[in-house]
Amino acid sequence: AFLVQLAAIALHKAERTAVFETSQEWCDALLALTPDDPDGAAWCLVTPPDRPALMQAASPNLNISEWDTVFSAPDELDMLITSRNHDLKSARMRASSPEDWLFALISLQTQEGSNSGSHKGISRMNSGAGSRAGIGIRPQGGVGKRWKRDVGILQLGRSKIAETYGLDETNGLALVWLEPWDGETSISFSTLDPLYLEICRRVRLFEAAGCLHARRAKTPVLRIAAEGKKGVTGDPWMPVDISKGDAKALSVQGQGFDYKLIHRILFTGDFVKSEIQCVQTLDGEGLALITQGAARGNSKTEGYHERIVPISPKVRGLLLANQKNQLERIAGRRITEISEMRKLLWTALAVLFANGNSGDSTAGIKAKASKFAAPFEVAEDARFFVDLNDEIEAADPAAQRLQWLLGLVERAEIILNAAFDAGPRSGIQKYRAQSVALSRFHGGLRSDKFQIPDLVNYYRQQTIKRQEETSDHA
Image 1 (cartoon, rainbow, N blue to C red):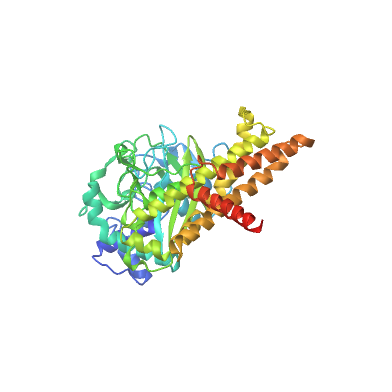
Image 2: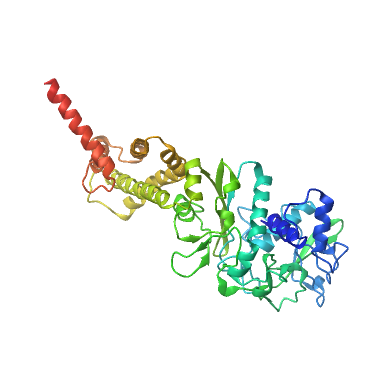
């Protein structure tokens, strides 16, 4: 995202549409963005504190030697919360390179939230405890192809971003670190460039004994005055959640990008998507949706999450034609059916752990049934979009769908059978519990109350067929 935004800003400044082809052309274009620093100081990691450095604002009225925190390794500086220092030790990257510090700076300044009243976060998330998600389309051709695609989309879309979000297309501040910062003032959101690259912390790198270190000062105010916007800032990779009326940026939770969330982002109207998140005519075949983000909890980190969802040719065509209703209907029905199968599996497991007594549902039995049923949904989540593509691409979608449903039954029953080892172990009680659990499972598949009518009808037809075969044989 950093490289895409930076390239689009430089190309706009140069009044150019095609990307530069040589390193010298890129160097000249970047220097043109910092006319007050023609010597390139604003692109260096270490400069005098009264001048800007890369991703570091100048602090002309403050001696940085008095700043409160010193970091001796880039992993201390990064946005991950490692203060407890138990499972994941901080300050391990002692033998680090300048590139490591650069990555840590970009990670911190473009993703960090508010850890306390003294340290504020970025504008491109819905709250200080939120996260900056990245949702986009990955074309064939590797990261370079994806970068070039996204740069082109931003070049064409900057006017729309400026108009939609109230940014300054003509004279807006694009590189926020160029503006000196005393830690007490914020920059007005409306004065920013549509593709602005922000910073959120007062950090300066310095060299000592041949090694890089960093100092950090308190930042009790937001660098960008956008608190009320809930992350709705025109971030090209950020979906905007409008499902509950008020618009807010997506925030990645601890479960990451599960199949239910991807379904909402890709097929429903719950989110406003940017152009980068939409399939383009020139993207070609072999596309995938890529979702990325680090989940932030209450003073903790809940993991980095990334998921790549293949987009089949027919799905691509439907998305291009903005015909998402069919996709939403098919995917939504599958989500409901997975939920129904999990409920049936849970019921059978509860009977098993209650020694075959269906009326026994203590908290311990419920918890045990939930524990053993959980892997079912996890496994279905992992294969959800591959299976969905198979149905959409199939010559006979109905037959493909039935095979998927039968596979759903088979996979649920495998989990039920595997749980037998954790069920009753003594004599008759063991066999009774297993028998009643299987009976509840198979009986549920044929029940009028079971909310997957295609399976109910299938098993009824199978029963009728067997009865007819028995009658003919007699």
